[in-house]
Image (cartoon, rainbow, N blue to C red; front, side, top):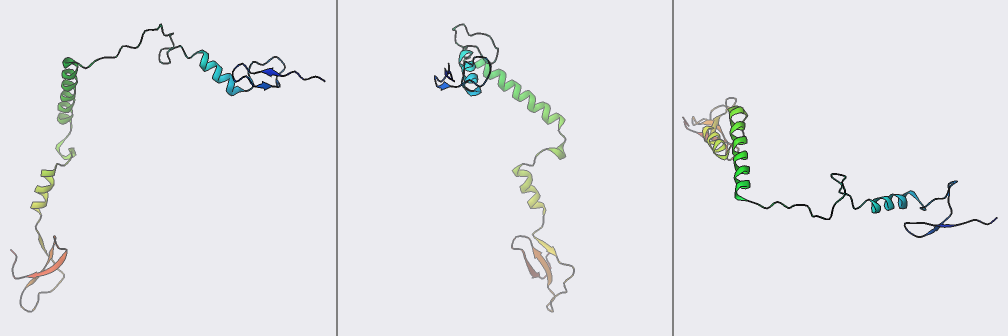
Length: 136
């Protein structure tokens, strides 16, 4: 029995057809690649054939920059009006003010006084217990 080999129209390799009718391609991969190569001329975003003209590249202009800045400013104003104060992000100044509002020394209530009368305090900066005469 004489088997007839065919030549793939994409990769030009010889192959034995697996289907009843004549195949053009040796495998699905070559069939898919041939289809994409044939339809490569069409524009993917609009599915319309490209007529040879290039896509227009917009240039930067002062009007465009001004419009973008105005849009960002308007969005920020609306966002600041809608957002409540307790939901706004903390700034560095807020954190420094909060740090200053905390006292460095905090009285430790469950420790007794020393015999010389000094009271125990927890130092927030050094993270140690210190004894002071009268902090306040």
